[in-house]
Image (cartoon, rainbow, N blue to C red; front, side, top):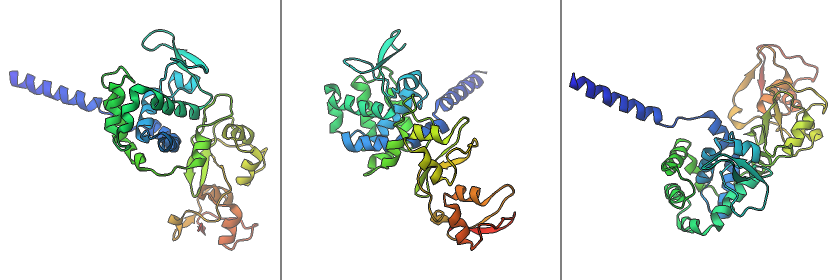
Length: 305
C-alpha cells in the first residue's frame, strides 16, 4: 500500500513538472516574426541581445496582447519613473501605477534599449558577450528589472523554445520589416496585420472591413500603389483572407518551383494563381504562352517559374 502511494506521488510530481513546461504557441511565433528584425536592429545599435529583447517583449506584453501593450504600446512593462512623455495607468505591484505610453511599437522597443543602456544598475550587463543570453537573463533579474523569482528562467525557456538565440548572431536586418511592422498611422499606434515575407516581397492577409485605403493608412503605403501592386482597382472590395502584396510582384515564382508546375484546381483563376505565387498575372500568361483571353480549365498545368 505504501509503495503504491509513493509511486502515485512520483507520477503526480512528474505530471505537474511536464504540465508546467512551456509549449510552442502560434501567437508567440507570430509576434517573433513581426518584430524580430526590429529586435536585431536594436541589438546592432545598443548591443542588447535580440533574443533578450524578444523574450522580454513576449513575456511582459503577453505577445502584444496585454492591457499595457494594447492601450499604450508598452511592450516591456516600463514604469514612469522620470518619464516626461505620455502615460497610462495599470494595476501592478500596487493599484493604478503609472506606466510609459508610446505612439507605436517602435518607440517602445527603442525606449527599452535606452532604458537598459542608460541606467547605471544595468551597466555590468554590457560587458557580457552578445551571445550570452543566459547571463543577460540572470543579470536582468539580479539588477531588479522584475520581482518574479523565476523571471530569468522564463526568459531562458522562451529563448530556447523559439531558438531566439539564433538572432544574436545576426549582422543585418530587413529595414522594410522594421519600418512597416512596428510603425503605424492608424490611430492605435500598432500594426494590426502581421506582415509576411515571400518571394522577395511582403504580404498581409485581408481582415473584415479592410479596404486599400485603410491598409495603406495603417502600413504607410499609398493605397493607389497598393492596388496597383496587386493589379486591382483602388476601389475594389477586398475579401477576408485574400493576399495583398506590399511591393511590386515578381516575374517568376520562388526558385523552389523551378521544376514544378501548378495544376489548376476548381475555382482558381490566373489572377488567384499569380497571387498565390507572388507573381504578376501578365508574367504567368507569358511564361505559358497563353493569350490573355484564354480561359484556364481544371487540370491544366502551368509553369510558374
